[in-house]
Length: 262
Image (cartoon, rainbow, N blue to C red; front, side):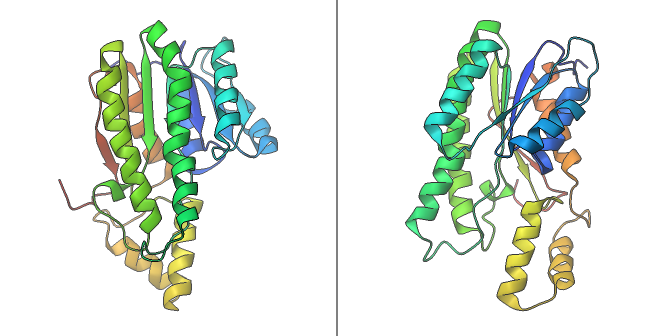
């Protein structure tokens, strides 16, 4: 099985922590040059040199960017590609604040669409030309199992994630003939700052203890535990590899069996 990414350049978003950072490490371990993208420049400057290097020519870097600032994001992505073609794009960003869809503020929807759907679209537009030239492209969007089953209390997130999934499926059909695949990885409950945010919101809303909320969430998972970021990152890395060349337009849950739909 060919998993080697030597000679490929990956741009990984939300790469300062959690699934994003774990994905950056996994891709680097397969030989890719990795550019980290997140907001905290000082942290990125510390993390990039720590990524694995499997061969002497491998080089890693970073971009400090805010996915909500679309014009600047486009300029930064285009400048990156001009200097070094991007063959792999991992779109990943923290989700909107928890809360019901009823009564959600319009500004929350607008911000979430900019941060997720529109940022993904801007980045894809910047990198796809270099993928087409080199005949190799992998776009993986880290979304949520909510695209299969809406999650209670995540109204804005559910809505936005579905939009990204539909965008990705449409794009997959348009670029497939150019050797570019577009897929979505759907994490379930994963041990990241995002899951802490969801637990804290439930604790505040219900008045129950953190241990009770945690136990209730774990009980919904057939494997009986939350995922580690590295487990989700492994699925992303596979979809970025040559071995996954004939897989496109899919939604892949990585959720320990929690999603009940087919």
